[in-house]
Length: 113
Image 1 (cartoon, rainbow, N blue to C red):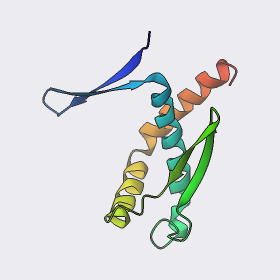
Image 2: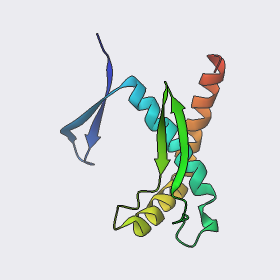
Image 3: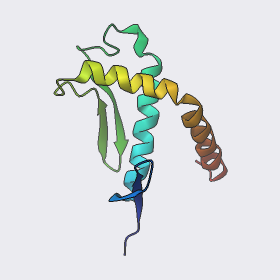
């Protein structure tokens, strides 16, 4: 038996029928990705393109005998614009994101992690 998280989309006026189901471990994978991306973007100002085109791998995070690669997707023809937008959105929403990360950190510490 499996359980999953279901993410519903709100269009601003109503809830959409479109939704995504993710196994719980993938939800945590997304949290790890957000944390690592936020950490990377905090220092991205050092690069002209907000990333180093010669070193696009940000991290390899070991998980259950394998690893999650966090990298800049240079296959994306719009990556320069997208990474500017991504960095700006992280900055604009820092208060919302940081509050939740602090709460998550607190809960994880309470749980012994």
